Length: 113
Length: 114
Image (cartoon, rainbow over all chains, first blue to last red; front, side, top):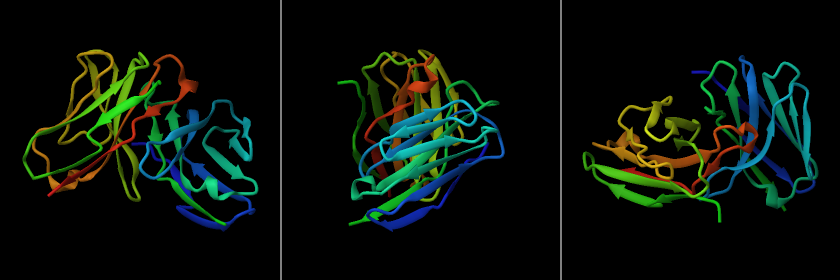
C-alpha cells in the first residue's frame, strides 16, 4: 500500500492568520486532489492538480503540486472561521489502478474568531 | 440534484448479525467505491467497482462484501459484523474517464457494532 503523509495533523489558528498544509509521498502521483470535510458530511472536492509545478487558486486557497509530482501544499490566506474543517489530500499513483485514490489522514483545521 | 445517497445514516447492531448498507448514485457514474474512516487513519478503501459486475478489493476488504448488479447501486454487506468494524463508512462515485472530476461522496453511515 502506498502512503500519503499529511501534516500537520491538527492546526488551530486565529482568524486572519495564514497557514499551509502539506501532503507528501515517496511515490509519484498521476494526479492529486484536495477535499474538505465538515462534521457529519462526506468530503467535498476542492481542486485537482495534474501537472508538476501546477498552481491553482480558489479564492483565498492556493494549491501547489510539486515539480516531481510527489508532494502538494494547500495555503490559506487570511483564514476565516468558515474555513474550519478536515482537509484531506488524495492521490492517484502512477502505479495504481485506474481511478483508485489513496487518502492522507487529514489536517483538522480550527479557525478561531 | 446530483448526489450519492447512503442508508442508513446511523446503525447500531450486535456482533454477528448480518447487515447491508445501501449506496445509490443518480449521476450515471461508472466508478463506485466504499471507504471507512477512522480517527488518525484517514479514509481507507474497502472495495471498488469499475462498472456493472466488476468489483475489486481495496486496502481493507476483510469482513466485507459488495455487489454491482446495477450501475446506480453498490451495497456494502457485512455478513458477520465484529466490533472492529465500528467506523464511519462512505460511498463515493466518479465518472470513469474524467479524472479531474473527482469523487462525489455520500453523507456517511456511522456504524457501531456491540
